[in-house]
Amino acid sequence: MKTKIFATIDGNEAVAQVAYRVNEVIAIYPITPSSNMAEWSDTWASEGKPNIWGTVPTVVEMQSEAGVAGAVHGALQTGSLTTTFTASQGLLLMIPNMYKIAGELTPTVFHVSARSLATQGLSIFGDHSDVMAARATGFAMLCSASVQEAYDFAAISTRATLESRIPFLHFFDGFRTSHEVDKVETLSHEDLRSHIPEEFIFAHRARAMTPDRPVLRGTAQNPDVYFQSRETVNPYYLACPDITQKAMDEFAKLTGRQYKLFDYHGDPEAERVIVLMGSGCEAVHETVDYLTSLGEKVGVLKVRLYRPFDTTRFVEALPVTTRNIAVLDRTKEPGASGEPLYLDVVAAIQQSNPKSKIPNLKSIVGGRYGLSSKEFTPAMIKAVFDNLALAEPKNHFTVGINDDVSHTSLEYDHDFNIEADNIVRAIFYGLGADGTVGANKNSIKIIGEETNNYAQGYFVYDSKKSGSVTVSHLRFGPQPIHSTYLITKANFLACHQWDFIDKFSMLQDIVPGGTFLINSLYSQEEVWQHLPLFVQEQIIQKQLKVYVINGYQVARAAGMAGHINTVMQVCFFALSGVLPKDEAIAAIKKAIRKTYGKKGDEVVQKNINAVDMALDNLYELNIIPTEQSQSPIPSP
Image (cartoon, rainbow, N blue to C red; front, side, top):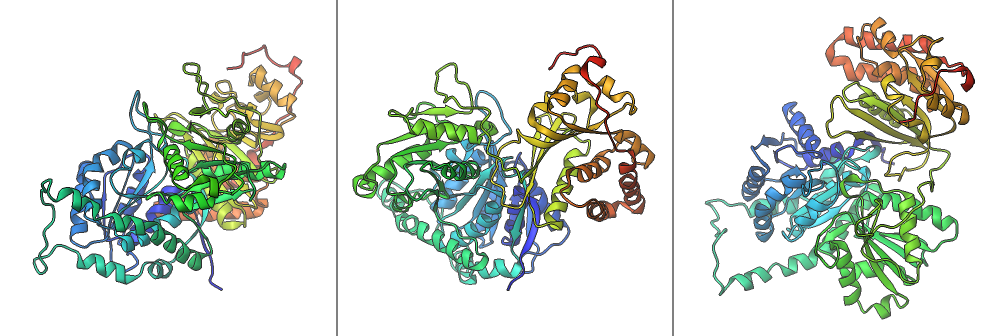
């Protein structure tokens, strides 16, 4: 039996690992949140890391995304296997070349960490505004919903584009997937090579422009031929869904992970179904499991291949018992009769003779969610299902905001929570560039590599980045984690910066009896007196276990100046119980040697000293009744 290979990586690195190995030319121009894919590729090329054919890809940075698209188009015309990475306005600058690439039936994959477009304001965060603006280019569009899917679909889209000759836009949610760290199963060079038949590569090479085989491309056409020529691509687009499904089936034989163009999950006799794509699928998947366990007849239909939209497969994927459908779009098209996915679903149902396929269908409504990475939680998902249960479901709604202008929003229960008790849920408050995020990424890797647990990490950055607050959300558990939303019921919470104590109502997100770790500047006798009264009251009311360390003092004593990340990481492992303490310490030291080995033995030894000293300086706080403490400080 083949040994499984696991890695604990984020979505950007997952995609880059595949894209780098199955291409020969990579044109880049970094734009948030896709930059890491370009940076990984550039790093690997500079290190001489080979692709699956034993050659080092040529990575070239252009002066704009428009230049990148031109470089990709040119490289493809030479018969090279070529890719790029982009998002948001960067993708829009590529659209003119994308029309040409698709019109010439040239196989390539653009990997897009989907991001908001600048409208009333600029946003670096994720939704589907950018990819929806590119849907008329003729690119096939394949959407992945998780880090594992992003890895897998990078391979599947490469296989499908080479056979179909339709260029692919493989997209996934910016930040929510691109920057989420998960434990994923990876592919060896041999696996990737076996997945991409060389006959399709040779066919691509044979279409290269060369003086040895002259062809005419890029002409100007008049009305007598343009229309007819434009219609000649139809057979290729009609064949694309079948080819993509075949690529998915072959991938399943290789890995055991089976995907479909439209994946249904839920009660086989569901009456209410949500249709969507992207990371929101994971949260709906989790919520459907919870609601069906209570006897509700609900389900979710996950859209994988959005273009070409296979109306037959879509309708066949719906339960025949479906009565009400809610289609969720992560974008807004002002002035349209509905958002893009909603309109496609309505058209697919209309064209399918719904009375024979879905005889009980009563309504199809559309809604918008998650623009600019706005939270999309089980509570909101339940509200969508509840809306479908009404005699007249609200159409063209929003969920996740309070729309007090045009009153489109659905009400939802903010306290509704479905997270399992066997999942360790930890939140860490840190300062941008203080090492907290890096330490947490190391913790996820340790747990992912040293245990059988699944691990997930998501990091909330302020758009000002360095010097601003960062909030890390980590989950660990024995089952796959579908929770693509922030933790609101943590059983472990750490504050790495004392100044944050009275600036954020962080203890509202910890469960009663949870563990609270504080990095304090004060002595053991002084800590309680310096805590704001509202924090003291929450600690007592929730019966929290509070642990304190002066991380700065320990770091300085270990020779690490103000770098507290290693110190606080040790405390987390000591208190969370994710790993036995001795195993955790050994794993941390192993990670230190791997992470800092290139910086020299002195740096490694300082970090190891910090590990050894941390537990000696960690203590449980003696909680004093509120009336004996300081004068009140108002809650922020």
